[in-house]
Image (cartoon, rainbow, N blue to C red):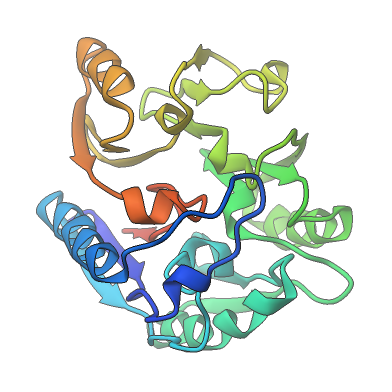
Length: 254
């Protein structure tokens, strides 16, 4: 087993989720549920133990569980999402992480922080400063993670929802990145990609990397580089600016 992973079932109100940088298109909630179940099966097949956070039917965006908590070692930092309508999502996730025996801390007003803006690689934590995460949120996270030996690097974002909408890390320490959305110079060993969804990956352990079906060229590139792409179809979540990272929170074994 690689560790535990938290997911959260889609709300029946998913189609009402927030869209910021793209045009709204109809969401098929039934198909989204099927895709979410397949996503969870892919994680389980890669050796992750699936945990379910309590459903939040009144919160359309609640399936995007990554935004509600940042986990570093035994500390779960409960976020304060930048979209006020999403703050009610944190309550159920707080119960879920507490049940796992994690210490908890919170981002407090006036700070805002979305977990999708937080990219952890080793002892370095890149945090996107954009529409959902403000400077005070970054300062608070830096203070909370410093005792764990983490260095927090703030990254100014372009016209993109979250940092991890534009850059994620591969198991070899290189970064898949969309250069027009984030400053590539803040990241070592960058691999620029052409497909928008090609920069969203979740390392699953070993050479396995979770990637969306909408990035076939990037999946081919990863395979050519010696990785094993695990491809999942998340079209209904992509209509709400979702990606493979935001549908789960991984808790690697300590």
